[in-house]
Length: 205
Image (cartoon, rainbow, N blue to C red):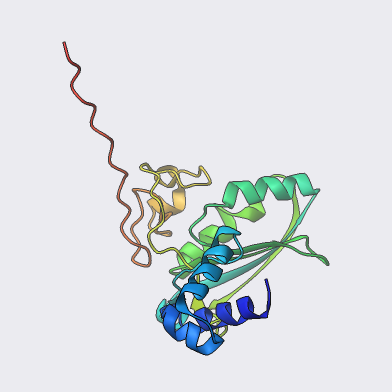
């Protein structure tokens, strides 16, 4: 990645809809050359062009969680289990008091309490201690990478395999459920629609 690539990325971060011609004018090259550079960056998995959502308009709660695990094997298990959690904004290994740090989002205080204690990383086996902080949407960055229409599981279980249908907090309306499941009743994420099953063709006799 050279300086021209970095400038190209910076332009797209400012406005992802900037045309290749406009980028070319700024960089002093043709739109074809810009296209080739961008394709190369994408294919090398150095860049992913996505849409961010203005956090000020989410009216959501943000949870920050520090975890200390017994070993890195436990940390890796937690990473794999929650990798597809739609509420997870960031997950990273760190040094200091804790060896893992996570940032999650919830649409209300009740659901926030659920991801802090019920379907929570901190309750996983092998977690020695944890600490949580929560607040409103962040001031910086203004736009969050949040998938508002995650792939539905087609049932009542989330990607972490927790079952909303049997969750006590969900049953007494103290949690809106996981956005991937058929039981989700919140408004922040899109209504989950189970993937359609392919119709089998009639066998020829």
